[in-house]
Each structure stands twice: as C-alpha cells, then as structure tokens.
Amino acid sequence: MSDPIKLDIMSDPICPWCFIGKAHLDKALSDIPDHPFAIEWHPFQLNPDMPRAGMDRRAYLEGKFGGKDGAVRAYAPVVQAAEAAGLTIDFEGMKRTPNTLDAHRLIHWAGIEGRQTAAVSALFQAYFGQARDIGDHDVLADIADGIEMDAAVVRKLLETEADAQDIRDRDAHSRSMGINSVPTFIVAGKHAVPGAQPPELWAKVIEELAATA
Image (cartoon, rainbow, N blue to C red):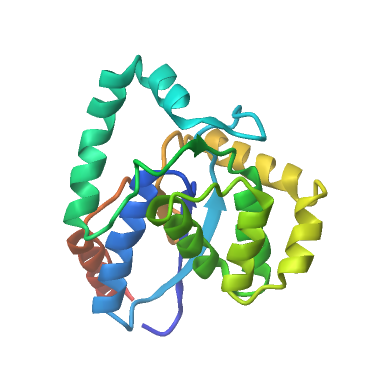
C-alpha cells in the first residue's frame, strides 16, 4: 500500500489494557512490516479528577472497586491477559497512582520531535515494568532523556502549565465523540476498534485495507 492510513490511538499510560493492546498491535505490525499505518497517540485520562500529586495506589483501587477483594477480582483478567501477551507487570511495586496529565504532555512534546511512540513505550515500561511514578517530574525527565529528548528542556516545560489545557481539551473532545474507555483505535478517521484486540484481528484489518486499496 502506497499511502499511509491514519491510526489514531486514545490511550492512557497507566491503563493496563492500553499496555496490553499496544503489545498486541506491536506484534501484528512486526509480523507485517509493510503495514499501512501512520500512528498518532491521543490523550485520554482514566482519572481526570486525580490530584496532580497522585494518590496511594491501594487506597485508590480499594475505593474504586469496593475494597481489596474487589480490586483483586478486577485485576485478575489483566494479570492473565498480560501474561498471555508476554508482558511483566510489577503490581507489587506500584505504590502510587499518578495523575497522567504531565505524562500526556511528554507524549505530546515527543510527537513534535517524531518520538511519540517511543515516549508511549517508555512510559508503559516505566510504570508497568519498573513501577516508577510517571507523575513525578524527575522520572518524566529521565524518560525523556532515554528517548533522546532534551531532559532539561522537558523539566523546564513540566514546571509550567505549557500545553496542559490543550491536553484537557483533546481529552474532552474524545469524550464528546462518545469514547468512554481506552484503548480505542480509530482506523482511517472512521472505523473505531475498541479494547485490547489480539494480533490476529489487526492482521485481518490490514489484509482488508490492502484488499480495498
């Protein structure tokens, strides 16, 4: 296929199904290196009302799912799906649930430099693989450095409200379109694919796109 096809992805760096969904997509795209997709990541905060400093993760989960047992039940399918996808998630190491506004700002700035997917991958790995607090500016600056962005510039930007309202507005725009959960993938600006779909589905989508090209 000659012309790229836009694949817009609404996602949040602390969303485990987004992490799993990206792994599935990555596998499909690695199996089909001449895939047609031009990928852009878009902000969607699972917890838009989270305090900017984040909060204790256990308190957050037990409050959200009605106690410890509820939280364990809610996360059992996540653990199973992550293992099936070959992903390791350090749930035991996670102490805080961050507000992800600043992480989304980093993704936005990385996009300007053509490093958006690298930023998303690094944030997922930092949060799920290493249990780092991706609401912390030091952590975000370190992640920026790891994907060859200027950490000092990123740190200075994080200390301001640069692009924060833009992130909130884009999040609100997605919700106004009817998106209420992530990941949500939009193919060619018109076909919505919700959830962490398996690689086989993406292979089929690419095959159908090739057939109609």
